[in-house]
Length: 306
Image 1 (cartoon, one colour):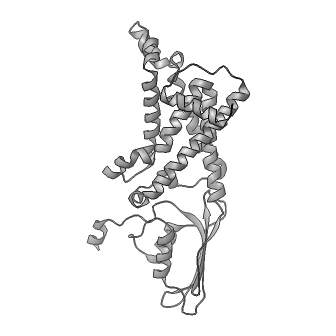
Image 2 (cartoon, one colour):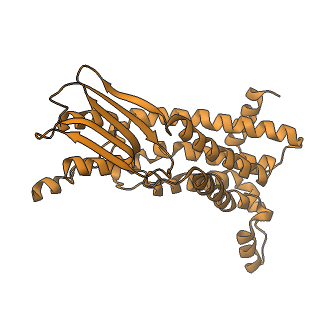
């Protein structure tokens, strides 16, 4: 059975979930795991594209998970291991009626058997558990408003679909496979952050006036933060070297205002070298930063108080 056939089996489950396990070998289950995770990320990538298209509407919404950096290994523990373990115990383990001890306890109290009800309505139950799993991730965001909730199915669309995939693993392969699928999903996200964002240098500007380079930091480093600025009396910058520095903190120190706020907690190394004796103005630097990083909208109340 190839990848396409396994995806077809997953789609059949999505259309009509059931709890009849596949009578297949461990190796075949492993291939289903790999196929399911790949399918999960293909759909997730589609939602990433949608979110990028809606980026102007998404600007105010900050993911609180980005508010604090952790070391690589602590991130593995806090993202790859603990949340999947807890979430699978809550949202996938009870999908099997005989393992749903809460529901069975209620049945015991009322001296009845809900197994028939559970089997009859399993499709709704799987959808419901997956929906709650997906939408609970909305709690990762702040500054929510009406537009945010209208966009919610897209914002957590990847998690909604992942919930269905993990339910497939749980009911058709077994609970351990749901755990492995969730672990793999989150671990891949960590590794993608490491490969595409951490210690990746990019040129923000390199023209006749200035050269500005930024190196992203996705995980907490032991290196001390350092800021060196060589500027003229008029404030123009000749040279700036920020090492392991918060972009928000750099803005605060350069501009001394509370009207400039970064949406996400970008940590970076930033180097600026002016190619002209008159230096590079702070306003020019700010324009460059606004082009490459997402700033929060300034509330009207701030301008009124000034």
